[in-house]
Length: 465
Image (cartoon, rainbow, N blue to C red; front, side, top):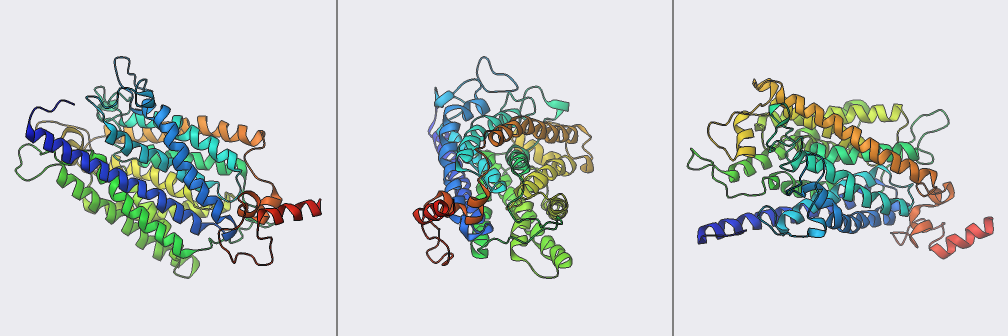
């Protein structure tokens, strides 16, 4: 990137610092996922879920470096609307379009997707399967969706030269690209594996399997909230962009507004879940509220930069009911997702993409996608008087993501199942993954009457056989 003046170099530096800081915040979400997952599973599987979260990050880093970034953002002379074709292993980065800070920011998003899916299949999955699906999801499945929606040459992109329905899909920080992808992948993994042992009784009634540590769940929720301030506002990429025809507004205004809409949607969903679940189950449930808050965040992630704060409250209100309703449906269908990740990220993610097509405000759309240029007209939310173009693109985005992830991750999980590398044996699941796969429990005092170390576990297995 050629810098011609001192002012331009300062501007570039400030924008780079902002993007890097946002990348670090998004990366903190990995810690949030780890804490949330650990608290939401039983103590005998805590070590396993911690390790899977680490693996999502380290395996995802390598696959995203080698292929993922290229498939997502590889533009050049032979760019096409479906898949990127250049910048493999960061070849010829930095260039006029992208530098290292942009790669790091996008990498932090990519590894979040695998974290979502690993929650759906917690407590019953072989470790080898995690390595395989994590590599495939972050290196291939997710980046192609990111290319469609976020690359300037993507066929769904709102910043493309050939806009779908004259609009393109507005998925600013990834309700669809990140959350719906992770949720649908988790749906197939969990469906193909089946419920955990003992989750439903002989009559098909659900048996409560509560997470072992509410403290970790709350800690994880707040860490994710903190990270979401990098996830949503950070998606502006640059903070020092002034809007024409105003003296005091620029991307910094949009960044602030996006942080506010994010907070309001999550908070509203948390309150509605608190009272909604109180009516349904008769007590105040901290863990349900935490998931409600996250459902609100997932839903606002698509339209966070293009809606008014009051609309974010509407978004969070409906996100809570989507989550509550899907959780009831999941129990009826005997679908077992220990983290509610399919319902939360899939259901609320799909609602968030549609919500944007209803409530996006034209002025904010032009700010987010055309840096506030005067005279630009774009389709915006149907309920705001903006026509059907945007909503049409949003519906197409939801449908193609569900189809694409189903066609790629469904067969992958099925193949792993057929090769017997997906689910652990019943004995190992009952004993707990920590002792059967990871050498011992996460907690020293765990299960005093049970074997304490892997060697003891193996000896007992041999004695039984």
